[in-house]
Length: 439
Image (cartoon, rainbow, N blue to C red):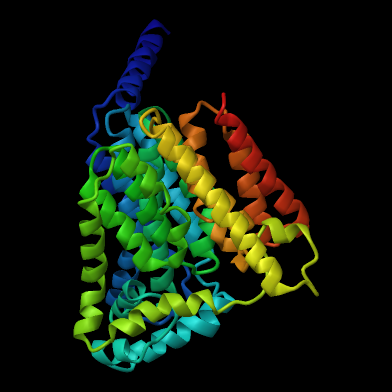
């Protein structure tokens, strides 16, 4: 019996050293996680890969696993110096986050069926130059480039479109971790990968909001880490993806006042925008048609509200004067933005990293809450920003982050919650974030 107890003690100590020490290389754990998920996907029933030759199936699955590779890269940066069991937990979290997303891989949303599928068919039918000159779709040229590449990958279009969004999810989670700081980085990273609104945006609805949001948050994070040129390039890339990046861009003025950015970074911003446009310009697309993509978007929707949990979600908008109420709300939104920016400029020298994140969150929340013609997805950036703030504040901002997530879920995913209640939750979150500024 003594010999058995001694053997068990040695086994226990060996297991403790193995799992609680750092004996296994982190790259090996990453590689094993990636290989295991690849094997799982190869055995999974994928409707659009039925009957496809093994080599073609393996290629498609490998492409679909690329987001996991990016997630593992950021997870390794967060957990690379921790114990083996902590690393395994981080890498397992990445695999579970990917599994949650691919659960919806077969689902095609209305936006995909009506718009994206048609744009992909048109891009697939011609050359790059023909696609650019045809002014296909309502996205800017950067996402058009991605769609064109998708048509040449040899991967089912629906899977490829969602894979691109998943890659954006991974970069967005990395930005959240960077903004949350060393103490809350892993918490922010995990929450950004697993929160339903962020999973469903690309997984169920095939939307690409993670791309512009990831670029915007990396722009903020890099500015706070004294990397102004990279920050300016990221902000420009965000604007190159979607006009909704304008909700956070006023923070650049405060970053400049706080000496995080300088006037010369404006040149980097403009050059990045031009570099993005250059392939389309060389392909024969006119500068006017590129700029016109954004001007057309501003006049595309004329209603006061498109299921957004904002000011107009609190009222019955049928029969209201769209012009009068719309202008009234825009005046409120721009006024609130101006007040926040002026306040931020006045105390820019005293703001810490947390203060800048809170200011960015307030800008997104207040602008989208007050503006007319907002869609439910336009609060998207508020979710990762609230995650970063909550993770870096020791739990003080968790209630506000929870309210934002629930309000987004109610408006985007048809929870059994009226839009008016979702709007109240969003307003309560704004009040909580504002109140926390003075603590």
